[in-house]
Image (cartoon, rainbow, N blue to C red; front, side, top):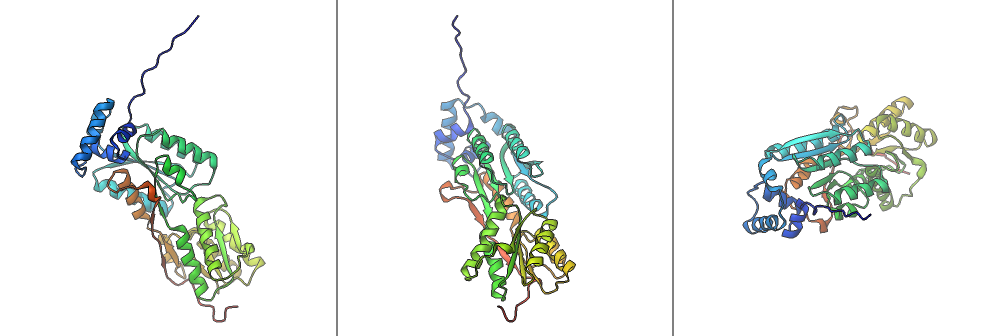
Length: 350
């Protein structure tokens, strides 16, 4: 017996409209939501593509209030809270709403949350916040999700060593200068006479820690100082991780005079280790510029990360208010040193 199967033609998507019109998905979305900044010729091309393809989503796009989806690892971490505040500010200014989901850093929850938001007709686009543990399988799944989606997605502060596959799959990427910030921090310690500089960092597979560790290595290399792996400890990106790592380094190498923590939480752990061991001579630099750093004794020198700007720019990309040029790669937001009281000068460096 023979069976004949039939299937309905694939329903036109916003991505198909954008490709037919020769514009980005974000521009097509802005056109269909009535954004007044769209030039008349562009609007005409998009609307022609809508008619040619029989795209039925345009009525929904015109009537629905624009909503930005937000996937964040935490609302307890002061850094991610700053990025979330930037997302909310930009959404509010544009008359949009924000729907957020918290993943607690779980990659499966991140994947599921992103997929659910992309399938939600209320949501115009999604901002995904935070670094990630590098896993080829996980990134392959994300690429597949992006390719099957017709909404704008911005990866914000993900700090990937090679973001090109995700950009080619349709993601927009906004990041900050992890490597440059770390180079500036460690170079400043070297300029102040420090030669034996410990590093307490996050896990070996965590994208942000990988980049900041690279900055530590580059600063040493530029100063002609040989990297000593014995002065590096990887562990949880927490004050406990910094405390444990610094204690181990100092027990084996008491000649260390300074530490770079690849987050302010890690640097806080170094403070605790120094107190436990009676080391009042250590210099410490962190990264993130979390509000607590200015209240420590001594106040923590750190690398400022523009959290809110990161969130604002990511949201503006989703809303189509900022131009995305994939051929230029990620949009990188600069960092700078915040000099406080936690670094002293070595008078006679060895």
